[in-house]
Image (cartoon, rainbow, N blue to C red; front, side):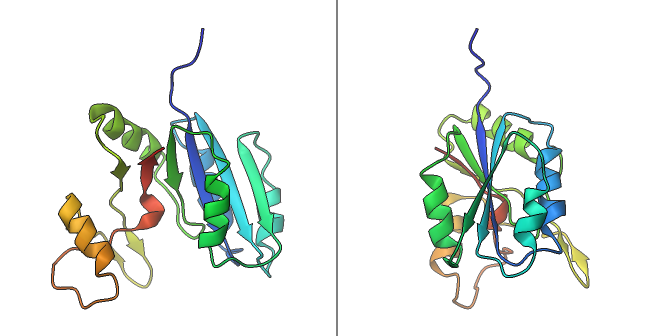
Length: 169
């Protein structure tokens, strides 16, 4: 009998994130949703990021190491050609995800077959911890945010974090 649980391809781009990458990868390995393939991309790090990534022993992990830095976009585009998932999720290497993140996003796609992209809320942890109260939700809000990324913001939304994105393949 064929398993009909959708496969989710997780992409974790890394560049000199030695101090954070283990927590990021561990947060994906501990997801309650387990139908995952995990692509960890080392974009020619000059620190020991690649060594830390190689220490993980999980058959779902695929490590791709670039010899020259591609500024993230080149590496991600190359890996997108290799993913097998029905959905593609992104995890920044200096962030971590709640254990239910992937399950909740999959449920949103299952609830709305027309859904093409899904972000999550986030909590910023730095000198101060804050939870954004309003993020872009509608197509129009997202379009305005991305088209005007470097322009002075004239709306009240906090920026959407691409590291929380899941898309339908």
